[in-house]
Each structure stands twice: as C-alpha cells, then as structure tokens.
Image 1 (cartoon, rainbow, N blue to C red):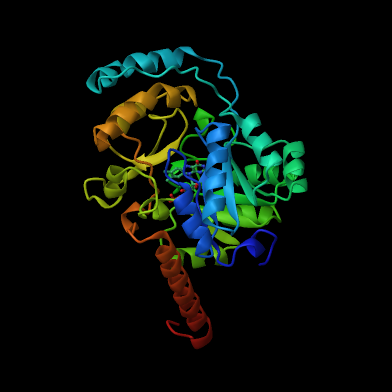
Image 2 (image 1 turned 30 degrees about the horizontal axis):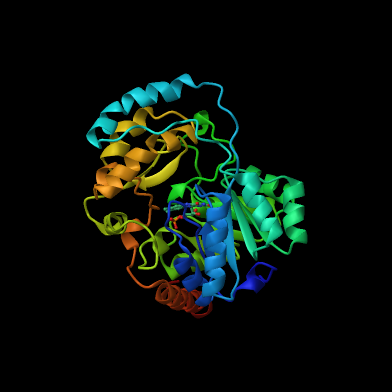
Length: 361
Ligand SMILES: Cc1cc2nc3c(=O)[nH]c(=O)nc-3n(C[C@H](O)[C@H](O)[C@H](O)COP(=O)(O)O)c2cc1C
C-alpha cells in the first residue's frame, strides 16, 4: 500500500500531534529517527513559537516530520452561554486563586500566519484538525513540496477532504484521546461518534486517498487490525504521551494507568468542543452543562488548568487520553516504536497462521 506518504517513512507508525506542550520536538524527533513519523503540534502556539520548534526538530533529525495546525473556527450565534458558563466556573477560579481567561482571545489560532511560515520554509508533512483548508492552501502546500493530511470523523468529512485536494485522510475514531477533529461542532450530533474499525471501513469505500487511522491504538496487534482494514498507517497519541520524551505533565502521565481513573469521556468542559479525557472532578462537575463554544471555553478555562497543573492537582487538569489509556507503557519513544513493530509482526504471523493452517476451524 505504497503512497507518497508511506514512502516518506519506513514504518506505519505516526506519533499524533498533541497540543498543550505534549508533542515537543524531542518526542517527534525520536519517533522520526526510529522510522515512524513524528509530529509537532502548532495548536495554541504563535506562528513564531511553531517556527522555533520546527528549527529545533531540524537540529535533532534529518528525517521527515509533520506539523499540525488547527483550523479557524466560525463565530457562534449564541454568546450568552459562555457568560453563563463563566458564572458556573467562578468557584473554580476562587479555589485555584486565579481569574478566568478572556473568552474572546481569538478564534483562528493564528492560522494564516502559521500557513505563511509553512509556505515560506516548507516542512515534509502538514496536517489539519477541526476542518478542511481551502483547495488553494492545499495546492500551495503541494507546490511547496509538503504532503497534506486532514482529520475526518465521518465518511462525509473524508469526502470533503478528498475533494479539497489533500494527500491523505486521518480517520479519527470515537476512541481517540484529545479533541475530535469534527469539521463542524454541532451539539445535536453528540453521541453519534463512530468507532475506528467501523469508520475505516466506511471511509475506505468512500474515498481513494491513503488513510491514517487514529483512536485507541496502543498495541501492534491493533495496528495490524487497522492496516488490514485498509489504513496505510496508524496514528497514536496516548501511547506516546506516556513516553519520557513527551512534554505532558508528570501527573497526567501517571494518571493514564492510575486505577483511580476507570474511564474516559468526551467532554466540552475544558474547551467547548468534544475532547476525550480521563473522568476527573472538573469533567464530572462541569461536563454536563459546558456549552458548545470552542475556542471561547478553551480561553476561559486556560488559567484554571494552568493553576491546577502548577498545584499538581489532576482533578482540575484536562487529562486527555484515549480509550486505551490503561495499556500505556512508559517506554522511551524509540523503544515503543520497536515494541509496536514486533507486536505488529507477531500479529501478522498469527493471522497468516490462521489463514493457512486451519487452526481454530
Ligand atoms: C494530549 C492530546 C493532545 C492532542 N492534540 C492534538 C492536536 O493538537 N492536533 C491533532 O490533530 N490531534 C490532537 N490529538 C488527537 C490525536 O491526533 C489522535 O487523534 C489521538 O491521540 C488518537 O487516539 P489515542 O490517543 O487513543 O491514540 C491529541 C490527543 C491527545 C491525547
């Protein structure tokens, strides 16, 4: 299943971009050096902050890597809901001895400036979350020699990605940690997320682009499953979040396998857009009424999350994690890539055995 994308790196393993300081250049470089594709996350950074990280990773590896951008968000019709939510969070601000953030601190995440940097000094791969770049932007990146990937959470979104002219689709299942890359956040669609294997099959029949599968993948055997289902590579977030190279807060890393956290949930509590995290106090208390207002809610809760992290209090932090979090391993990133490849190979051998030998018939 060779494509321009898979020809860039030898192994079918992509380290998911993780904004919020998780996928730092050291992590991305380690994965790329190990033969996977490492990713930087430009989300929540300035264009210059993103560029500094690009320069850093170039100093760490000569191998291909990717940069991930958030798409600008449309205006919301209803702003009152954010004010109400701010009132509901007043007790949190008092508890953490901080102020709530300004919900109107910008809704485009510096997209145009970041795109300009990527066109000025091109990177091997660029991916996009929360929507589809214009056909012109994708064509410009292609002319600059950059391969483009866009997240889709339904077959319809994947078709939109193909029509716009991207090089590959990141198929993100409901199991995924962090934000769902849904193109338009519509509250009525809550609960209609699709599990990864069901989604890959639908997207595979809808588009002919190469697919990168994401969501809940923690073992090589699962990577074998998504490759068998038609993906060209697997994108893992939570598995790499646990590595020593990841910039995630130590409390966040520990929580992944702490038996205190029995499950994950999709919530708008922290950002206003559905994102999967470990169920903690903040999520339990505020998730039920948090409005569909991204990125206003993200800006509003930023000081709370920062204060909770500073205090080392996991109950007030956004503990993003996929459904497979309990299988997280604290291995160095390069070793994790190796172990995943060995498991993938074992799964392939086991599958051929089943097909050839009649075992289990
Ligand atoms: C902490 C965290 C941050 C994330 N940030 C981003 C991001 O900035 N951009 C993006 O495209 N995806 C982001 N994601 C989603 C991943 O790309 C991917 O879909 C997800 O990690 C896959 O599920 P898994 O965590 O179960 O492996 C993030 C995921 C996590 C866990």
